[in-house]
Image (cartoon, rainbow, N blue to C red; front, side):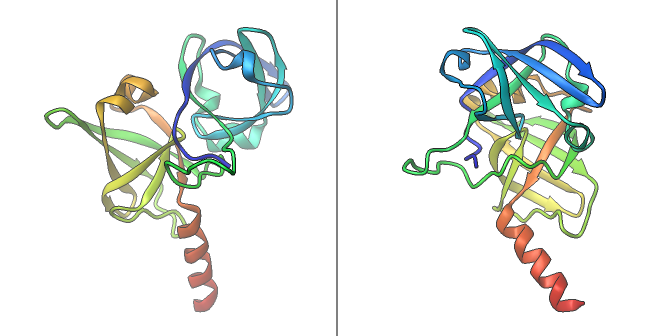
Amino acid sequence: MFTGIIEKMGRVERLEKDQENLHITMASDLAPELKIDQSLSHNGVCLTVVEKTNDSYTVTAIQETLDRSNLGDLVIGEYVNLERSMQMQGRIDGHIVQGHVDQTATCVSIDEADGSWIFGFEYEGKPEDITVEKGSISVNGVSLTVVDSKPGYFSVAIIPYTYENTNFGKFEIGSKVNLEFDVIGKYVAAYMKQLKD
């Protein structure tokens, strides 16, 4: 479990295909503090550390993960949002993020708003994948509040700190991002569907 509050960005150092799996080696200041078998969020995707050195570590993404996320599009040198799993005795500063990406979205607008930015995203509008105004959404692992919500579209406001300390500052029109919809909303949607059926 994660909170969606990004700790650091890591840089992709090596990508190695192994049958349908992708081994991703990341250079990160977090590496010395990590241990083998530890869960770590990468652009919102929960992956397990399988190897490590003092300045880098390796995780493995299986085909299911590559199909649902933007990790299969990574290139050497790209920056990825990182968050270690939450400690249960700590505060939840964002919202409950599982690290299980539901689908990807495309950035369709970036508007400067006098000291902040409004990012708009389009996604495949499935009945179970919904946003609501002032609700929570995880974009590349970042816990955010929805500003505007329509079927298959939402926008979020980004403050300078988030813009500078996550990979939001590197997004362009057409950038593909990972989405995890609010887990409570997903349960409510599933429950309502069962009531209808």
